[in-house]
Length: 248
Image 1: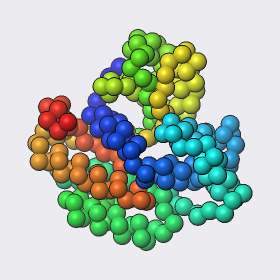
Image 2: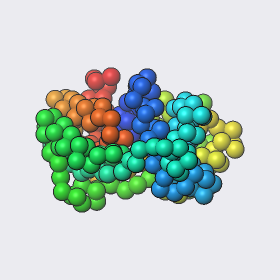
Image 3: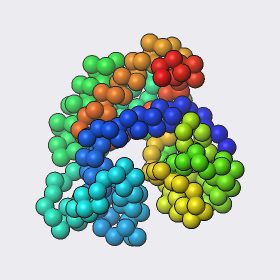
Image 4: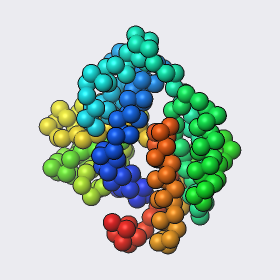
């Protein structure tokens, strides 16, 4: 079992840095609220909410803050009606981008995404132009205190499709419907699970080995991520190991 793209490593390291930013809490709370609005507030009956709820807890969002978000989603408390919209675009060198947003004003968000792409070497694409290059997967991150063989064996018995070494964690990939059962099995075996989520993974990648090109695409992703409405940015870029080492 092995990974095929360095994007997972980049996103993991960026996620660790994002944990220091106040914006992260707001984005996670918004995700919980929307999941509750779309599927109800029962964690057992709404697997998407259960995943978002756990993701917020993994990032130390207080329980009462999460519970209030659930209640806003179900209508028990007054809240804003956020709409999920995914924008498709291209970065430099033909790198594909999927940009997940939650917004209360699609005109504002659409205009901002287009502007950020244009100003940073990218462009907005027509719906369907990029999405076919990705597929939704579940990911579970396990602390490196666990032995690789243990993670692999438990994973294979519970729907795991891939195991990737992200330097300081093991990342296990599975179907989205298996992410919560897989996490439960790993935790039941005594392994430390750090995070679980669903994400979009590329079915093919664009390799980059030029430092300037890598810096340009990483900067574009950074400015997109900084938008309050953007929840996640998915890419099919595959960056050469030597470039990653030079940038770290």
